[in-house]
Length: 288
Length: 250
Image (tube, rainbow over all chains, first blue to last red; front, side):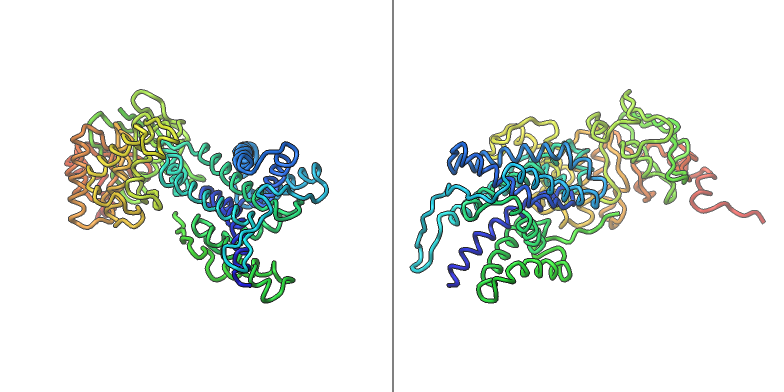
């Protein structure tokens, strides 16, 4: 049974990791937490639902189109909404929660009932190991997550935009004087955070009935995953996400499904008390 | 090339600068000295556009930069370092210098990824030159926040040089350095001067200041109390009073 649980945990864990990456990207760049991340993930699912069910877009174009649209939406919302909230973290957090509520109710107005998501990745199973079922969707989730992480790594390490983003994350004021366009870097950061969360939404869609409140819990758990791994570390967030997915799946089976959601938040509490910078995060010294 | 005229700045009623005027001529090395809290760093922050003065004007190469943004002042050719070392700690030493070196280079995403962008290659080469100039070429791939303190000072200078400054403002480049490192730093600033770059230097180490600067400006309580050659300034009774207190008549 354990291998089966690990596969399920890995799949959900990748989703937490991708949504958590959205938190991490914004946190690294802005030192602020965007609590609308879960609703962005949900909006990605519904955008995917619309494109796949009503317009018949197949899996691979869908995985390009949804993040592309979400990227533009993220950069646009940064310009219209988030930019006005940077002056204080409290204002930003409350504003982001408010934006999340608005996104959720906007989607609810369009799709009031829970809906089945088209099986865009097929419904077959693989049996790589005897007795262990590997759903096609899970394979897509893992492979696409790997590709995305690799792409982000290449972008951050080798491209000038990636370097500019890291320079802004390290010291925005100085980066600005060194010729980096800070507003553009921040727009790009939000665009990317929306894009990865929306891909997670498309990937998980076929596994469940989708509903406008599906982002609430995923958003909070992805935040816990980011805190677990280290919210200022990209690698940490991915490891935190996968760890959280696996812990949840095994604990739900061996302890009780009723308490499944408790584990994520117990880990969050524990980390905040014991090691607030996470497993792989750095302690950021406060400069005066 | 730089003219500061009658600059006033107060923070919540506390007078930080009270009518400071000074000039820096092309190719010159101007030393700005004064006791702690006399307004030296505040003056640098006004010149580089981080603070806006309440009153007065700053012009650089004939352009009024009093209300200009830091980045546009940099693009006119005025670069600086910071007293509290503001490196991009999570980037490598080379990347720290590539960021400013890329400022003037065009390029594309795809070219960057496949490593065929001419602009990026030029920026890399320029960054390596700047690192060699300050003597950090052999630690190019080390993460910046793992550098020794003395190396961080030099990296800040390399990063500023990558902006092609006509005037370089150095805020306490020798602070916290060991005596041999101070000599290296002095030699490095000598080589910057030899490139024809004008230098404005805030420094407490009087030996470094005396050797490097042709002219000194002394600040005390936000006012210029003396200017002149190092010899003139050190003989000035006001300067002695500012540093050591006023002698009591008996």
